[in-house]
Length: 209
Image 1 (cartoon, one colour):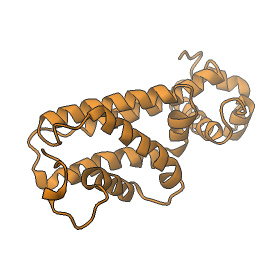
Image 2 (cartoon, rainbow, N blue to C red):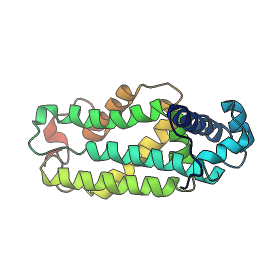
Image 3 (cartoon, rainbow, N blue to C red):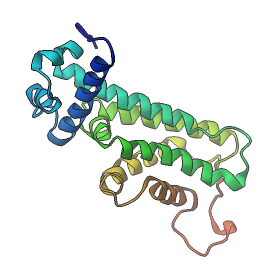
Image 4 (cartoon, rainbow, N blue to C red):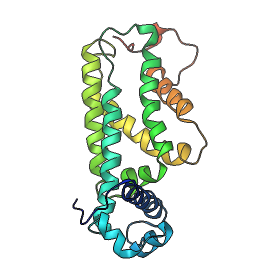
């Protein structure tokens, strides 16, 4: 993304950040095509020529927001990989904390999330890349003995991304569930399933089989 005649100093940085913030809300609320540069600059109390000091076009601004979402999401997913040597008694908590960090990001940046995860033309690619990254994490963790060796981790990764995608819209962003509670419920479902009052011997396989 190019920039022309960018202002120097704090006021320039603040104006650029303000445009990004206002544009994220406009795009999230109205979609790309219904969002106008004139509306963004009016809300920011800037002139339209000032917009082009920071961004080449509306498309460039939108693309930067998508990239911001992508970079933060993939960094959080990278950090969520379980390192070797974790005690089994803390395994569920470690997994939950990694997922909760991603969900917290979604809550802290709801406009960015709506753009990058749902509205952008690149949204499917982002979710496909996220699935691949989670699958790689899971295969590594499977090799460490954390998960059943018979599981197809591509199915687990696809399922997890589908769960995240749906529950972010229906439970997380509307505020029906906190990131921590939602992460706990998702991890409990995936690790322990839906059957109650069963001993570990009753399962067809165990988590660490």
